[in-house]
Length: 347
Image 1 (cartoon, rainbow, N blue to C red):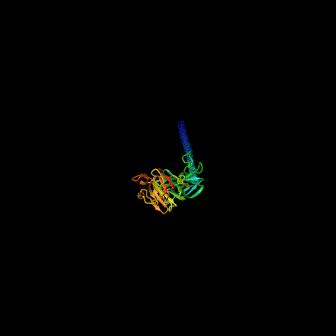
Image 2 (image 1 turned 30 degrees about the vertical axis):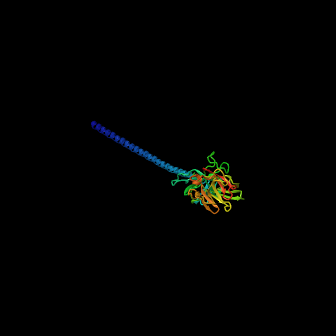
Image 3 (image 1 turned 90 degrees about the vertical axis):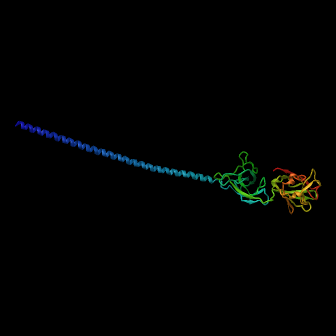
């Protein structure tokens, strides 16, 4: 009996211990479940942190705001446009033209200068078709007043050549007003527009055959002297105007017109004086006769009313087959009183 009771008690204790182990397992399982739940919550928190990364994307939006700063750079380009708003009045316009009066005079249609200035004529066109500067040496200039100037007459330092291109360039007058000083202490330099381009314009000239470079007008003072009244262009006067029987300077190769307002009584002649004036010497060109030299095509002597035209070229000026070359002038009717010397110069 006691033995059975003891077995029964041992069995009961064994079952109790198993029950307790199950409870521990349950407890552990419950704890594991809770831990997993906690871990899941933390992961979810990590995902929330990912949401904060999404907030970084908002920071990317701020980068888009930086693109607005790029718009401010565009504003800087606008500032460049304001540079163009500098002196926009400066201008020069020259039209193609025919020089049928004098081959040493060109006309610039208009030029606008900010203060006193110059319009300067260069050889060759201003630029080629690609915009590369091609203008050459200065061959003429004229002073400008402040503001707009129109129909500006410019005397050239040499006769223009038929069908050549020239360049009219605007310069300032920053030194002594009325004195062209370009090349000295940065004075009287070319004027540029708001984009830094030199203000200039190309034009072409046509020069009809026979057009003179210089025109000299003379009259008579009784039967005693030739009175030299004017020279065109005035730059080539050389003291002739207002003089009686002065030395007549002629440029080699240039064409001249002598307007003799006293032709009827005092025909003009050019001669080789053979060491003296008066009745001596050989007449080479004359309003009173027809010397052989007048047929020389290089001299191209031409009488037109009171005017005679000739080029300082050919045998009359080179000695050639003739007895000599021109070194004097005189009146055909009063050779001993109305006379003067001629000097041929290299221009």
